[in-house]
Image (cartoon, rainbow, N blue to C red; front, side, top):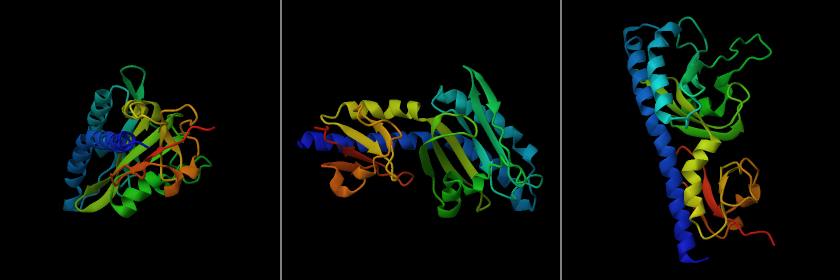
Length: 244
């Protein structure tokens, strides 16, 4: 491999880092608003109700509007028992058409056969248990968007304790637009793979997004690779040789 190709892979990994950071940065306004709202009640021994989250709706919708389609949905997802009137609750809105928004409704009744216990999902558990943001996917979201998504999530803290997550669902097709230009500038075939070995993006039709590529996970599998240096993801850009 030429040094230019190697340098290009590192540059592509840096572009991915910037793309990830840009999504989390766009969530900072919602994170700050949710922290401020919840912190007014918790330090005084109070316990907010689900209706107290309603003032977040304009902030959530403004974040969606500002993203111009890059986010499919965004909002806050509360930890159990934080609210006085609901064990589980989310204030999450999705895009509906060109300019509209609709709330995401999930079945949070533990007695229902369609019960969706989000506390078991990695995008909730990792911020709760490890105290940092995470990106999960790509996966098909069957509980709302029915799209191929990446879920970005940050721990939501109030009065020094974990009270939920602030997150966003980002269609893979939209995130690819931030990544593929850097891949296309490489002088070799390359893929972006997640820590579990799924293809997130590629500059060759040989590898489809979402396909398992676990053979590329070992360090010796690629002639050149570069890690995406951000704590929220375990992704790598890997050079792949064209099949003979």
